[in-house]
Every structure is written in structure tokens, then in C-alpha cells.
Image (cartoon, rainbow, N blue to C red; front, side, top):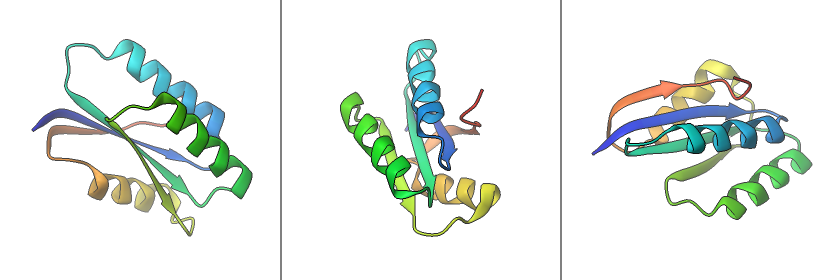
Length: 97
């Protein structure tokens, strides 16, 4: 079981999302964690940029899930929650923090 699952939403803000992910990676130590990014039906270009950048990071603890419709912030987070692995804690974080 993981210590922590981190869920964040992307909606046409792939650069902010990648910056957030990189910050989490840099600052999160001594914790077994995963990051789940939910793309909330971003425009094609933004999603493709996000997908490319996630692949470049090549991390086994990083998941990208695309929603075909913009379900809003709350439901997007619930989709993220359902995509998490079993963990002791789950946190929802805005990608612009």
C-alpha cells in the first residue's frame, strides 16, 4: 500500500500541471507516493503536450487519465480518486500551487 496518492486536474494548463508535478517530485521525499493527473477534456494541443511531457518524465508512479468530457472540478477529482492505487492518504491539489 502506498503512503499517499496525489490527484490533480488539468484543463488546458499543461505547463502548469507539469510544473506542479515536477515540484511534487522534487519536494516529496521519504514517502511512497503516486501522482494521478486527470485531463478534463482539454483542447487537443494541450492534451498532446501534457501526454508528451508525462512520457518524457517516464515515472512509474505517474498516471495520466483523459476524460472525454469536462466533468468539472469535483467530478474530475472523483475520477482521479477512482484511478488511485490503494494508499493510506489521498490529497487533491490544484495544479497552480
